[in-house]
Image (tube, rainbow, N blue to C red):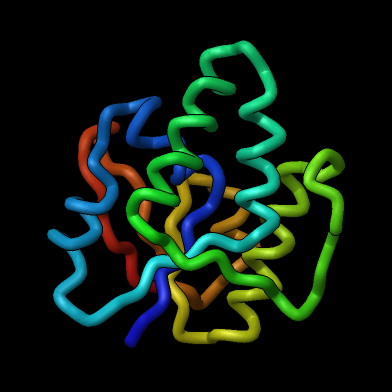
Length: 138
């Protein structure tokens, strides 16, 4: 079973762009998979949700959606930051990189070009035309 790791910006897609990421992943993945979110990404969403901005509202909705869909929260061996209030975007990216290196078969769901560059040889799920998801195999 393949593991698909969701990053922060990917968790916000249903609200930012109106993409049903769960239906789209099901559409493009013709294999068994499990979705997971590193705890550092969840911490970043919690931090963002404290803002009264549009992104804050999206982050609150994303947390609720992850709970509703019962997405697995993972913890990498390398814990970057233990405080939810101190978590940053960099912590989420570093956790994804660390976790991916532990699980070489993982697929990373992100639109973050810099994160993609930092993980050569991995497969990615990203947006296409701001409407669809695509599986990019490296």
